[in-house]
Each structure stands twice: as C-alpha cells, then as structure tokens.
Image (cartoon, rainbow, N blue to C red; front, side, top):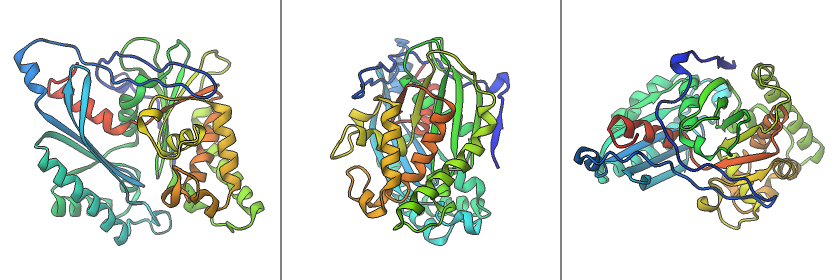
Length: 371
C-alpha cells in the first residue's frame, strides 16, 4: 500500500534553520559540491561546551544498518565514528510477512557493534530508528524488544512521513541553487520516499507533498523471479519492475507541477551513489568524490540500461558493485528511471547523506549545539 500525504502546516517541513553552501552544477562529466551547513555562533560558554558532547544516529533499514557519531563544531558537525553493514533485514519479508531468524541475527550482530561504539565514544544523546521492514513485519515489535534486551539499543519504528522528513533534513543542502521546484528522493531497501519541496529561500526547505511507495531494492527484487541467464527474460523483468514502480508513483505524479523550468532533483541512496561511481569510472568507492556530485540524467539512464542487460556474474565484476549489491542494483535502476520519468530534470544531485545526518541535526538543535 502506498503511503502518502499532503502535510499539514505543523508538519510542512523539517525543523531548524540551516544555511550553508549548496550544490554547484557542472559539466557533463559530473561536478562536485560539498557542504555541511554551519551552526550560528552564539559565543556563550554553554554553547561552546556543547562541542564536547558526542551525538549518535542509527538507521536500521531494510537492507543496511548505519551509524554516525558526531560532535558539533563551528563548521556544522565533525564525524568522529561511523559504521555501516549490509544486514538484509527485509530478506524474505514479502513472502512470509515476518523478519527471519537469520536476518534478526545479522541485524543484532551489527547493532552490537554500534552499541560498543556508543559506549566507547561516551555518546551524550542518541536516536535509533527502524524503517520499512519493521513497519511491515508482523514480528516487528517483537524484534525491537529483542534488540533492546540484547544490545541496549532502543529502536524507534518511525513512520514513512518521518523517514522522508529526516532524509530531507539530512541532505537538502546539496540541492542545486535555483528557484524551480525540487524533488528529493530516498531509495531504500523496502520503500522509496519522494518529497516535493519548496527550496527557494534560505534554510531547510518546506515539504509541499510526499509519497512513500512500497518498493525498495529488496522488496522490488524479491517481487520478480526470473531466469537470470536469459537476456530476454532479464529485460522483460526489468520492464515489469518499471511498471510496478510507475504505478506506485502515479499518485504523486498526477500532483507534481508541470512544464516548469529549472526543476531540480536530488537523490540519497546506495543506488544513486553506486551509479555515480560508475559514471566516474571509480575503481573504489570514495564518499568525498560522490557526496554532492551532479550527474547528467542521461548518464544515469544509460548506466541503468547497461546494468539491466547484464547477468549477475557480469555485475559482480564491476567496481563499486561487487557481490553484495549485484543482485539489488537493477531494482534500484528501475526505481531511479521511474523517478526520472515523472520528474525529467536534466541533472541529478547525489547525496551520500540522509536520515542519520537529519537525526544528528535534530539532536544537536535539541541539545543547543546547532542553530
């Protein structure tokens, strides 16, 4: 079921006032724009003391478990520790409606590493969230309780709207400058969030409209069983994926502004960062090169077409994909192309930041570490 809403004024956008640099468009080879918006300098000793505190954000998604630990600084915040591991929490969920024991074990092992890092870094304030897999699973709450018993981490199963809000708060500074309407999207493991924002002023943009579609790289991959060896069947399966996603996006597609110039597009997900790495022909993933990159949409479509035609073994040999992403990246391509169908921006901004950074900004505001 597609979740969607036109937010009320009270939930019209993420809290906070962030300025800072924004993405700069560049040549067809891709351009770079790196920013972390700075907080205001209050000059008080209480504010300075906040810089000593460590804050943490954990994002347990359908595919990945990610942690960031950071301290406020005059330049925004400084990351002091990070962790990321593919846990595939949603593996098999579509068929059984439950999180499997194997997936639970993988997630708890990763969260145990996170818990140790929180202790070692003396974290002052943390927020840990779980998303689509836990929202959808019949044993989601049972899993949350077990995580707390075994790791001490209290996961909060957030709504799709809160997930979208945090993603926007975490990455909006990378939007290209301009006055045209902007769409920010997050392709997850179990769902994809599309958020239309008004980003014409300074600070955090206002959320105008949003939708959460129940297709992410894991759920969409598992929806299509086909013969991976047969080239014709691979392409047919890709077309079916595109059709599923397009139907889910049709709700917001009918409401998006039409025929407006200067539309902007920003994506945060493993799909867009992986495809951006292929665009630059990187031999190893480099966040500093990818985060803030601006890539022509035609290049992303061409890479998607190439990957969808390859077999699994061929994709596994590609740098920045490997065995962990090879079976899921095609579903991500289908989702991305469907987004470009309904929002035909000439360029795509790429963000290697999102929910965790949004959580950190919220925590630091609450603790007085950011403005």
